[in-house]
Length: 138
Image 1 (cartoon, one colour):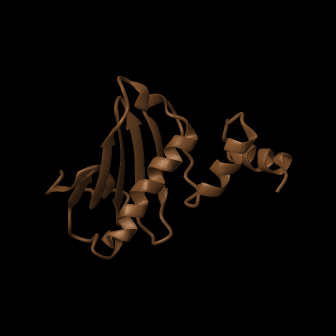
Image 2 (spheres, one colour):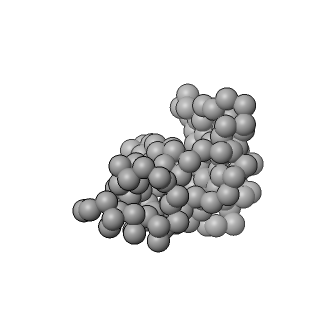
Image 3 (tube, one colour):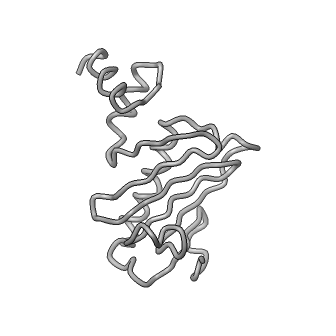
């Protein structure tokens, strides 16, 4: 694939990454077609291939992904949450789109590896960078 083709595809996806190599990387690692928007917080939402709804948010020093069977339960009693505190000060609200995709891929990899998608219904498990940290996250 030529650099011009990559630019064209990523411009259609509204990715404003200047470096063509970084654009190519972003295109190939964005397997869930996550489309982040905004700043302070940076957010993204949509559906996974297995049908669950997700919500990504990054603000201050923390980013998180919430995954649930229904869109409504994302906001009240999400079935699965992964979060990490990894930024200094308010950096989390200004991360780039490639960083969003990397973080999202990390969380969804854990979600699928731990087979959470098969037991999401009725189980409200909160996962952090230190592993499972509790039940009833509402």
